[in-house]
Length: 359
Image (tube, rainbow, N blue to C red; front, side):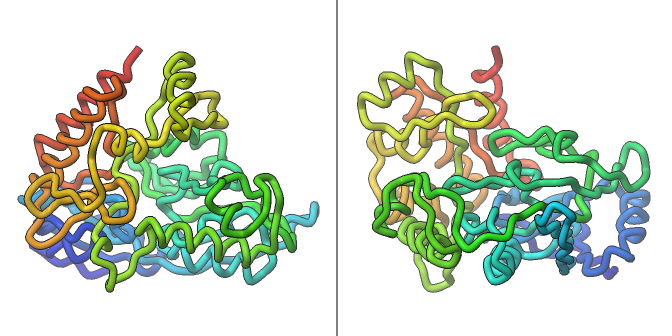
């Protein structure tokens, strides 16, 4: 495993923002993970970078070592109950895996099509979209436990998956190595529950369609929102949804539904409202400049970078949006992207959101 010093991180992220890593290594073979352990012994436990689609790199760069997880490979095995268990290397692109499962006639991941990122990030975020999420199909993960100094296997229950969260979120104790899912052979998708997707397919919500048709419709909806990475798209430099969908109480949910806001009940028992709807309700417009080099997408209410955008400007823009939403609706937004390095304004924004959410 080759380690570079003072290596640029911005080109390895979808925002294209930030400075250099003091030490950057790329892992392509799990047999070489011992080199990562040695790097940690010499320096400190590294940050793990996949495709950089949920990362904000500080302008001053990152003093903590960074390991780019670039391992590939997926093994499919038929289980006695007829399901198919697939074990995937953490660095394997999620898009490639979803396409392979559809090609193999397996349901469970078809609506995750078009999500950038690596498979190793999916349990961390409990990645989900358009009616499916990792919690529905996760069997277990293997990970390096930096506290115990050994490889461990954690069951889906051990991972404590929630809405865009898990035990891995905001913790550097574990580095994920492989992820195992259980999928089901099927010709038809899981029921389509999202209105935009159902409308595009010409079906009622709750109906199913062939796997490839469901995936194509989801991909079209994502593309219409600028949520598919495309170098020719001026809104391409983004991290998807910058803010988590916030939790609302019963009274808030009732009021928001009366305003036709997208309010949904989640498997964890909590009710959440769309962050993008709140941003629009706070008076922002598509394409609006929020901070130098940072604006609203022209397709969807999320922040995108352009020109000479900086991490400081992105943090400023996120703060402006969060403050305006709270003033207009009384609801505090929590920014989702992970921070590599030190950007005080962004850290304060996250801490403020966590403090406001505390009971």
